[in-house]
Amino acid sequence: LASLDALVRERTAELEKATTALAVQTRETLHRSSNLLSVVQALASQTALGSAGLEDFLPAFTGRIKALAVAMRSVTGPD
Image (cartoon, rainbow, N blue to C red; front, top):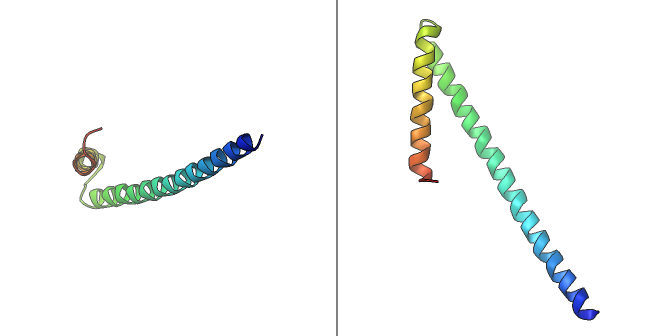
């Protein structure tokens, strides 16, 4: 019975450690997502300032988003 109790305590500690690590990763993911959305908002604003209308805006904005995706892939590496 004592060995079972020790096993439960050990597993509980492992789960608490894993839960803490997951919480940190979740906060980091949310932070990075928020930063990325700020970049996208800035790209949209800057593109809109240089565009005469939707016909100019959409291809330019799409191009900038694609360039951002390529840059992010080059930083993070392949899947």
